[in-house]
Image 1 (spheres, helix red, strand yellow):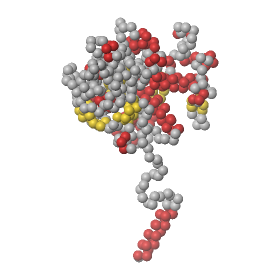
Image 2: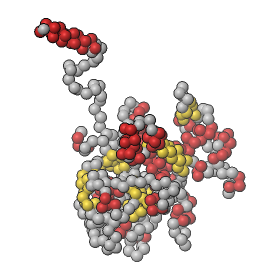
Image 3: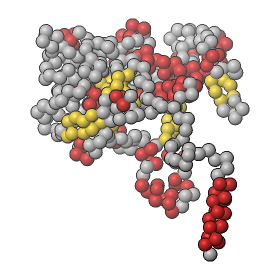
Length: 434
């Protein structure tokens, strides 16, 4: 009996050995997949590292209006990278020109557009760089993108920038994460309601800033020169881009992510987290610069320094716009940065955040990376399209420049005093982990 048992065990052992022939082992121990190189999150050009931490989010001063829209609460924020300055005209122009060149290459076809063996179209960028937009052949090839004769002031053909649109697809994580989808899948994995295509959203966004906002935003005011030159003139290259809607800002973030990750892929490196608009909580945390209970990014409750100089570009006194050194927006690196190294977190231009606006949301938000995100559709009520705007601008009084002041604008509108900057979640507990 004992012999039979021993022989049976021996046969099982032989079967195990034969079954594992050719299987690479690590001495039978759990060691993880070999050959994976150590990796640390590279810092994107032009960004500042904002460390993980906790802070009291909300009003630091008396709520004079008794609005209760910024009730203090302690929250914790994961580390992230944030742009040192607001996105400038020249940085945004890189996006606009990239979309223009892609659209033109698609129109012109060979040799500017190539098709790979899988039938997928690609832009031949080496050839696109050679496009001469003054060439009559090119003008004729993209005539549908140009102003027609009746729309021209002079005989010179100009591009109709309204037709330059950025098309992209994104996956709606929030919709896909709905618990009902999981329950449906467990009941029937083939249910058409949970097909992946149902969670893919296609965007088609006009990318050129609305330069007419300088005229539209102010009644009985002469701002025509700003409307005519602010975005395209090289004198304003280093000034923050304005006239960009919340949807356009998100499109820029998506393009910037694809642009960066394409470079990493070519180098054989893994992709990184996407660029995005900062959440409302991230923005306030970054604006405070590590200071506690600070009304402004520089700390104190005053808008002047010890020499009597104003510390940001806003509407001081009773409308003496030039007293602070600015009139309209000023350069994105004007004034001193806060303790994190971020410029103009107060004044200059207000900034879009990713968060939807609700006056009572502080009561319901989580205390870990709090956020209220909602991408409203065209059919949603107008109140659902409100997005949080932070920081105050060149035309605002000091109250709106405070770190905790909340205001909002509608996601499909553009203003001459609202810009944005990007954020990217840091992969890891802290940059000090290196």
